[in-house]
Amino acid sequence: MYNKMKYIAILFGIVILAGCSDFIDLVPQSTATVAKVYKTDKDFKDALIGCYNQLRVEVGDNSYMWDLVSDDAQHEWATLDTRRNLNEYAYQNNEGFFASRWNGYYSLIYRSNYILAAIENADNAVVTNKQTYIGEAKFMRAIAHFHLVRAFGDIPLVTKVITDSEALQKGRDPVDKVYEQIIADLKDAGDVLPASYAGVDVGRVTKGAAKAMLGRVYLTHKQFPEAEAVLKEVTTMGYKLLSNYNDLWDYTKNEHHSEYIFDIEYASNIELGSNFTNEFAPNQPDFFLRYGLVGGNGNCYTPSNELFTIFENGDKRKDVTCSRGWIHTVTGEYYEIPANAIGAKGFTKKYIAALPRSGDSPANWKVIRYADVLLMLAEALNENNKTLEALPYINQVRTRAGVAPYPDTISRDALREEIYQERRRELSFEGHRIWDLFRTGRFLQACAPLGAQPYMVLFPIPLSQIQVMNNPAIFPQNPGWD
Image (tube, rainbow, N blue to C red; front, side, top):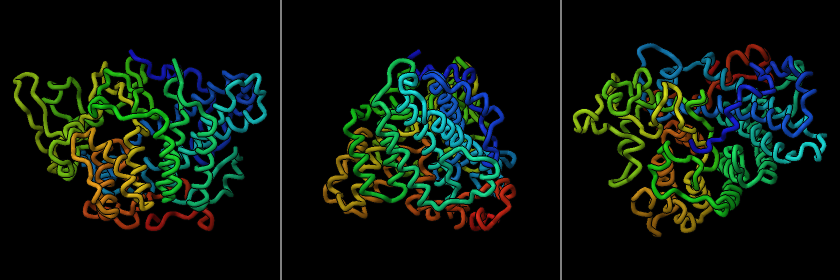
């Protein structure tokens, strides 16, 4: 098996930090014990594995579920549950999914803050990778705050370990203030992280990952000149598109290729596989005959009917992104999947892989890859009135897909719309669509016909947090969610 960030194989055996279960529960009982073991370089490296583990749970294991709130996925369940609530815009402020994400990201923030506090006075001669560990911890803190602020708007900005009593007085900070800290953390991380790793460390956060994520943050916060500058820098760091789009989804090959920038890592056969293959596969007997695996209950994450219509003739991405059927293993004939109860039929092939057992897929979650960088850079340039300069970047992605490049005559407004569509064609089912709709102000246009309400441009602050804080002056609920 190729190198797949093997150090995560010992994840559950050496995680030092105890995670908090709630924003208000900020001081683990093991604090005294933790302080005693923060001495050597290995101590801090092991502690950071606790951060990677928490990132794996929050960004990896759950990111795909956000797609259900977008117009990319349709979902069918026999009974009401979180997935159906998300898909049908029936979720409320007491939905456990939101509480889990809130608690999980604040747990990651706590772990990062504790490491940063503990490492501040560490001896450089003993903790030889001190600056790298600081960069990793700041990246983790930044990505946690970023996911929170995108989802919930104003949030508590936490940059140090605080006590329970301090937490009870900690109100929601303005979005702009939160973004300032996210940007500062990612800049710091990009300054000190290595360009690459070797051996068992492959898969840890790199300089390129920090800068690419910084570009995404700038774009989300509509700081287009800053996004242009940092994303251009990423294009000089040795990344390039794979020549074959389908190779991105071939899990017999190394996922740490030229297009890889940062993934949430999984590995099968050592009880560290992902559940993506099962979640995205249709639950059909004939699908089992073709691929040897059972899909999720209720035809999970069926591509919307609209998604099939946005691809141009000859686009090599379409069959992998949204397919109606397959060549039957037994008969050798083309088999088209039947429509489910809501009239949708199809599946994405992005996560199909051979499994040793259910829920043990080798498929990584791609947090950011080079095609995303190229499309973000094209968008930033176009918003900066540099439409002609934007074209080579988006056209790299289109050429790889086998479709015609956009001509030099295209207008700025027309290219803006095409970039939005190109992101959907390239990145569907990779956890980007809902955030793209939010940041471009197009969520209601796309999703109101599906049932979304105007106040749903932000998700509800978890009811448990509102009740614990019990102070609407500093900790109000988002509009519409009371």
